[in-house]
Length: 306
Image (cartoon, rainbow, N blue to C red; front, side, top):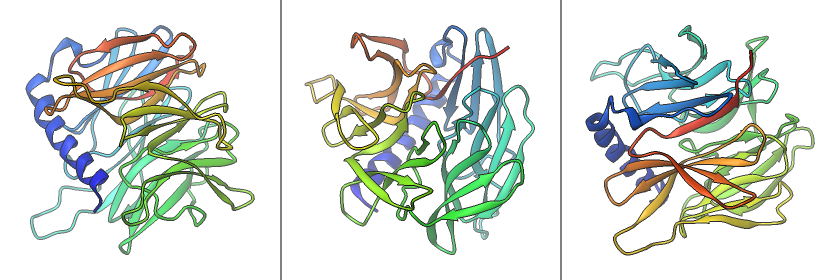
């Protein structure tokens, strides 16, 4: 296990402690105009926020690692990897991919794995990509929602389990964080038709913009939020946390794009305690606004439809 994965596990543990203490505070979540937002809690709870409405979704079994949930582009569905059941002390946990409408909790489960990581919906909501472990081997799977069929993608090997992944808006490419031993994490784009893979940066938690123009990821070594074009050109830093005395902050849990691709929600952890502020970054002006203090991380942002 490399240092990045260790640090993530450490942050998750701290965040679980902090969240349990802060649970129930009004600052945990927030709303955005004409939007659906997805928040997650290590207490195995998702919150879907539409204006003043908050829908709470919970998995059938509260056990195992907290995995990154995904929100569909129209805010109608969530995808989340969780245990099939509560395992006894002498049993190994088995995980499944759960899909539920955001309006009510109606989980439909898919597959039986040793572990499941992050998930991502295609823009047309017909497919879900997710990282999974089967027979002790990591793989990237794609679930076809209309048919229920599941395929393994061989183009991307070494996909990080605990990291965000994302589809291109046209559904022809996937971007993911790839880990190979002690090597730096690589942001890799796979063309599903051609079968080729291109490395476009070094970092974690990539997310494709709804316009298709940019991919955002975090440079965790230098604590920078970076944008890059899908072909690997035009790299630019849009937020730099750095390391300031008594004001140490770090990025976590990936970034969430606004539906128009003009803004980002950034989850920023403060100090050594794991407290999270969700910050709104306007890419045109560079203005940063705090949306929540010591709250839950934001995992998805979709346009609210009638």
